[in-house]
Amino acid sequence: MRSSDSDSLERYLGRETGRSVCPLARLALQVRCPALSRGSAVNYSPTFRTGLILAFVLGLLDIVFTFVPVGAGGPPGFILVIGLLLGLITCVGVALVWRSNARAALWAIVVTRILSSLSAIPAFGADVPAWIKVLVAVQIVVTVVDLVLLLKPNRLAGRPTM
Image (cartoon, rainbow, N blue to C red; front, side, top):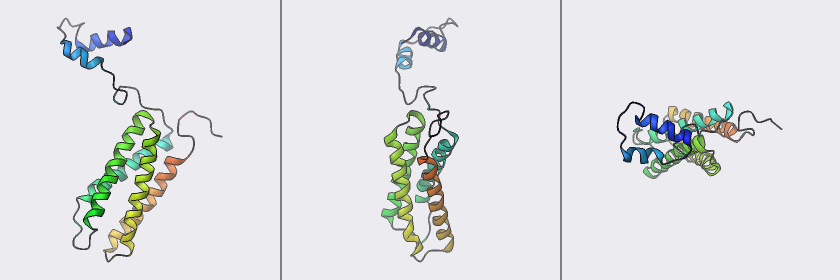
């Protein structure tokens, strides 16, 4: 631990205020977790950040629509479970990419978004209400836009384009 870290830790724990410091609290704050440490987020371009936020929203919608009742003409149960899992993987992947620039997590986001869109395509051939078909079409278009934003070169801000 660097001395500046030690000084800020002492200030945070109350050494300057004259309070006693719990040794367990000192130990807990000395443990470093790169994914949760302050200031470890990567400086992404606005385009890439927009793609990550859009992917997170799509993942959340996958999770939420798992629990929305659509009646007798809804998707089978296994499709709902697949959508739930894809949404969870997407949201976790976005968090990992946002904090640590994990390339594998980025590809997990891309694959889950593609699989989510592919699993929604059968709604066009099924006997479902028109508003569900419109939602599926919008989801597929937004997913394509999201993939373009995520896979566009020049992910890091300040890097020259080639």
